[in-house]
Structures are given as C-alpha cells and as structure tokens.
Image (cartoon, rainbow, N blue to C red; front, side, top):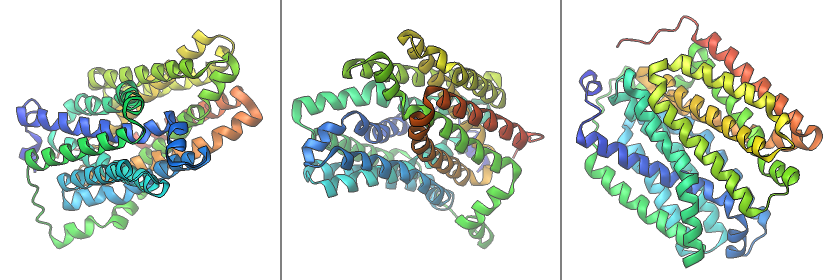
Length: 402
C-alpha cells in the first residue's frame, strides 16, 4: 500500500481519474440541488402539491446519514466498487424518473440520488487520500470539491435550459445518461483493488467496531462533532436566506436567482482557496481561520438587514468561509485514521448530514420567533463551539508518518 501513496498526482492516468470523479460529483450535486430551484415545475409535472415535492428534499438530505454505513464498506471491498455502485444508483434513478413521470418514481429517483452521493463521496475522498501525499492532498480535494459550487453555477442553469427546451423530464434523462457514461469510464480506467484481508483485518472493517473506535477517540470524536456543529450553523441561515432576501428587500424570482449565484461564486472561491492556500497555511491553521471568519460574519449579519449590497456581501463571506473551512477539514480528517479513511470520512459526512437536518428544522422556528438576530446568535454560538471542540480534539495530535 505504501508504494501507492508515492504515485505522482501528475500522472496522466490519475489526472484523468480526478477529472472523471469530479464530473461524477458534479452530476451527483446537481441532481441533489436542482430540485430546490424548480419545485413548482416538478409539482406541475407529476401533478402533486408543492409540499409533496419539498418532502423529497427531506428524503434526499436524510440519506446523508447513511454515509456512515457505506463508508467502511469502501475500506473492506475497495473504493472503485463503491464509486461504481454510487454511479449506478444515480443513473438508474434519474433514467427511471425521466422515462416514467410518476410521483412514486420521482421519490425513488431522489432516494437513489441521495444514496448514490452517500456511497460515492467517502469512497472518492478515501481513494484520493490513499494515493496523494498529505502535503498535496488539500490541492486535489479542493479541486474535487469545486464540483459542489459548479452545480450552482453551471448545473442548475443548464437544468433550467433543458426544462425550457425539452420539458421537466429532460434533465433526469440527461443526468442519468451522463452518469452511465461515467460509470463505464470508471470501470475502464480505475485500477483493480485486491483486498486480501486477514481475519483480524475483517474484524477491524466491521462497521460497528469501526464506529465504536471512532467515538472513543478524542481526536476522531471531535472531528465528528465539529462536522455536526458547523453544518447546523450553516443550514440555520441557508434555510431562511431566501425568506430574508424576499421579505427585507422585496426581491423577485430573478433577483433571488442572482443571490444564489453569489452563493455559488462564494463556494467556488472557497474551494479554490482551499486548493491553493490550505496546504501552505497548514490544514489545522486554515480551518481555524475559516471558523473565525465564519463566526465574525454570523455575528455581524444583522447589520446588513437594511442594505441589499451588504446583505449579499455578508452571504458571500459566510458561504466562502464555510466552504473553505469544510473542504480544508476534509483533507485533515482523511489523515486522522489512515487505516480506515472511508469509515472516518463517512462518519464525518453523516454528522454533517444530521447537522443539515437539524439546522434546516431549527432555522425556520428560530426565524419565526427571533428573526435575523436569533439566527445570527445561534449560528455564531455553534461556530464558536465547533472551534473549541476541534482545538480540544486536535491538541497534541500529530500526523502518522506511516
């Protein structure tokens, strides 16, 4: 395994692999996020109330928790296999919804898309972590994470064009077909992974054993709690930012779309900053800086309540700092347990998924009863708590040289 890690990240085959899995993640992220923007269109398409479509979003988000189950399977059976299964879930679900325009099929499609993302994300991160040196990992993972911002900047607008030109089923068929092509390419260009596990190694790859090990370790437990807290803090504002923009500044649909573009640009820059600065700063220092900027942005948010330019600027800084923090932390987390990277990353993702569900649920009530000031206080507190827990967990931790 050691010689794999010394593989140059500049080899043509590996560059092609990174390109393919980045594009695969773009498809995954677009499938997950475009529903938010086109709820009314899908509602009319399958002939159900808007509330029935929004419930699909909850189903899709809820699948994030399952990453904790699928991640360790990558350590045991190989990351290539998990990537293939994830793409198969996405392709089959999207193609089914594109061919059969029924609500039940659409529900299944969103469930499979969520499952696919929960399967493929930890596998991709672990695959890269296995093959790229720690010193260069921030660069490669930062590039991979650009697929998240690209889903807002490119994916969702393209979906809109497809719907306008060919109907609401067109994006499902397109994403499904492209995912199938990616699946075939991954099958061809990714190396075979032979897992010759001893009895001891098989026991160590047991999901429950790995999870117990993770929560018993101060270092890994702090990373899991950190993920939960920052995801809750971010979704606490994300779930109500549209209501805030519309209510305070009377923005219409086009203007709200512009605000979403601002978020997409911020995410892209955050990922770019991770790729080019996190390794130079040091991953731990980069995360701390990102958290401090996030906390300051949250606490100052109410000052932007009566000025649209300030409000958009505040959202820009919040999402830029959050993306920089979360992507930098992925690189660090991938090194906390080198022998079970996928298990650690899946727990990290699952905690973030729980945090998003909590934040989305809590944010609406916080906004209803306490307004923007309440949102600001809650998100700031959670960010500070995340910083304290992370510093506590990483105190004295040193990266293993093995």
